[in-house]
Length: 66
Image 1 (tube, rainbow, N blue to C red):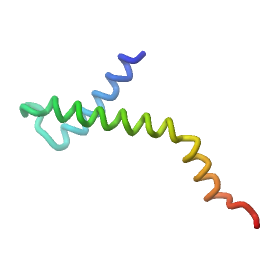
Image 2: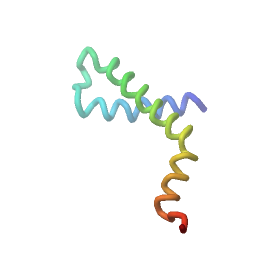
Image 3: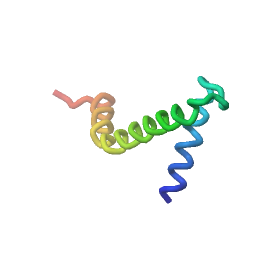
């Protein structure tokens, strides 16, 4: 299961890195790993903060009556 998730993150990171750096550049792998770690960090933060964000959006959409 984790192997598939890492593979998906690497594919997405490779695509994003390919927009900015040539695939045969010497630092492509390093930049791909950096972007993959950023994607994982953003995903984990989104999952961890989802209840907080959901409540904030819900309150903005339907403000409490005063």
